[in-house]
Image (cartoon, rainbow, N blue to C red; front, side):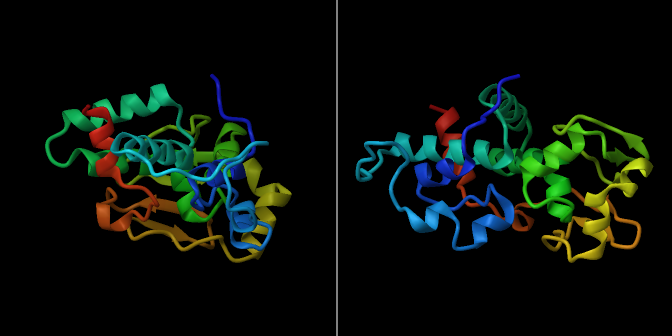
Length: 208
């Protein structure tokens, strides 16, 4: 499957907003979005005022880049959210937050979702004791996310246990620091999700 392989810092410069795609680097003076406030490219021009459609497209693209989802997969998430009763945008966010790679990131096991995706692809992560290599796997309430026994001997795991985790888990997740396991306490609500995009604009984009 195709995946974005260009520099992630270019994405932040493109949307003129820090999306925290590089983990800790985004909060240091080395962040390109802090140093260069122009779009990427050799002939970068000044930013123009966006139309309503342009704003909707930008918000959709920001969501895709943040969660590392391709367009076809993102459309499937939206189609599933649109079938559910209630607020479509909120359910779309819930589907994205329940991705396994995002849960690994929220628990603080990785500095970024890209790094979390790599951990899952490498077979380090388990759900309810069973190894999975599917980053898009959707977690459920009462699921336990942990580490494969062999992975606890890696240098990365040892460094992770010896230093503070990258962030505090949200209220819908619990973390046992001693065993390095997390548990899904409930489904995430809109108030529990902090993201730098407007989900209602995404709904408007696909409802055109």
